Every structure is written in C-alpha cells, then in structure tokens.
Amino acid sequence: MASGTKGGAARALLPRSIRKNWDLYLLVLPVVLYFLLLKYLPMYGIQIAFKDFSAAKGIWGSPWAGFKHFERFFDNYQFWTLIKNTLGISIFQILVAFPMPILFALLVNEVRGKWFKKSVQSIAFMPHFLSTVVLVGIVMAFLSPTTGLVNNVIKLFGGDPIYFMTEPSLFKSIFVFSDIWQNMGFSSVLYIAVLAGIDKSLYEAAMIDGAGKMKRLIHIAVPSLVPTAVIMLIFQFGSIMDVGFEKIFLMQNDLNRSSSSVISTYVYEMGLLGSQFSFSAAVGLFNSVINFALIMIVNQVARRSGTSLW
Image (tube, rainbow, N blue to C red; front, top):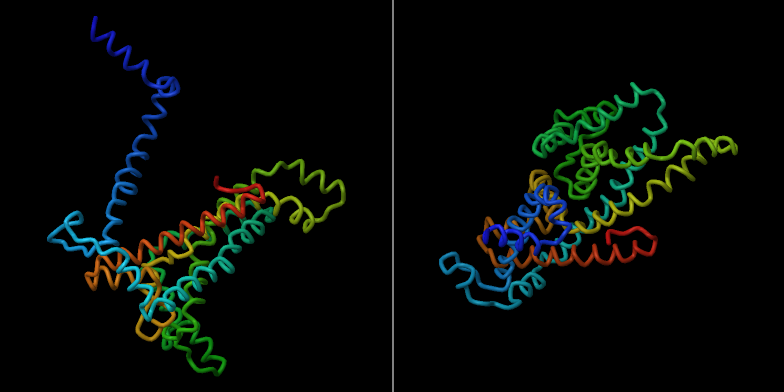
C-alpha cells in the first residue's frame, strides 16, 4: 500500500504533458541521448585549446596555456591564405551552387509530362549517392590531360591539353561545379515539395486574370520558395567556414595547394599528422566561433524579412 502511494506521488511530480504523452517523449529520447552523448558531452574537450595537452597527463592534468595557441595561429604566415581560400570557396558556393537547386525545382515544376518529369528528377538525384572518393575519381578521369574527355575535345579542336587538377586558379571552379552536379538534384527535393504544396486555385486565378507562365512563376512560385530559401541560406552561412574536408583532401596536390589549403585540411595536418593537438583544437574552436557568430548575424538580418530560425 505504501509503495503504491509512493508511485502515485512520483507520477504526480511529473509535468502533466509528460504523463499524458509519455510514449512520444520515449520516442524522442534516443535522439536527445544522441546529442547529449555525442555532441554536448565531448565539448568538455574544448579546454584542450587552452592547454599544452599531453596524452600522458590527460586533459585535466595538462598545464594551462591561455591563448598561446590562438596567437600562434593568428601570427602564422598561412593564416590569411587559409581564411582567403576557405571563404573564397564557401562564398563561391553560395553565389553559384546555392541558387541552382531553386532554379532546377522551378524548371521541373513547369514540366507537365509525368514520365519525363520523374526521369529528369531521378537522373539529377542519382549522383548524390556517389561516395566522395568515387566522385573525385570521376572528376579526375574526365579532366585527365591524356585520356580525359574534356581534354580530348579540346585537342579535337586543335587546342593544347589543360592540366586542370594542377592549376590553382581552376581549383575552386572544379570543386564548386562538381558539387553542383552531385547535390543539385538532392537539394532541390525540398523546393519541389514546397512548389507541389502551392494551392492550385492561385494558378487558376492568375490564368483567369491573363497572367502568362512567366508572371505566374514570378508572382506565385518564387514568393512561395522565399521562406524556405532564406532558412537554407542561414544554414549555409552557418557553415561558411566548414568546407568539406574529404573532397578537398582528395583533390589536393602540391601544385594546387596555394588554392586548396583550407582550415579543415590545416587542422588535419597539424592535429593528426603533426600531433599538435592543442594547436589544432584552437584552430577548430576559432572556426566554430566564426560559424556561430555568422549564423547569429544572418539570422538576425533574416528576421527583419519575417523568416528566421528563431
């Protein structure tokens, strides 16, 4: 009897919403545990950036170093090159790659033949499932100066072969346009879903008023995509300093290093290859702080338009 009374008292202490929807909270529990254990708990390791870390002494036993590693990074001769390359690739992606899924979704939405529409979507969607290693291998095969299709066409018209992968000025373009080819179809799915949810009566009313396809596109389809595009743009700015490591690392060589060295590859070289764990942690923390500041600023600016993350 006493145990039943205690159980009832314990249930009474729980908020009513939890007692009423306990099954939903149980369903979301694995996700909460995932973020707590794999995202938030490891953050205690941030203190390595402010210490002279020694594996023998451990994180807590290593002596404090203050901002020494940050100052070393800021004074490094590669600092501005890394910032310039990282921002250059990211901004190029935002200007060129970001609008492409939106444009593709608008074009696909105008296709009336269902079979052709699904075929185009499937063809554009498939490259997303290629691994980065396979993608870079395909890019190198196409751009090979001896057997590559692109250089064979150039030689067919009397030109000299171009060594694309060793030319620093071409690295950013190759990186961004190969990314468009791989991810445009997948990224357009969200925009296509938004366009599919537009009330058909809006199009019918516009047609009755004499609006052509272009006017319906500009005044109905595009405004419907703006809120979603703004949210995705905020996410894009929030990761502006996080240029994909794996792809750049696979495309990088000694001849294009002046354009391909970014913060993520520098952290790998200094941290894993050079075993300078505190220094690489400081560089990574600097990178994260910049991303956090940018997402806060861009979200604040976007809020004025009525669309924001929070």
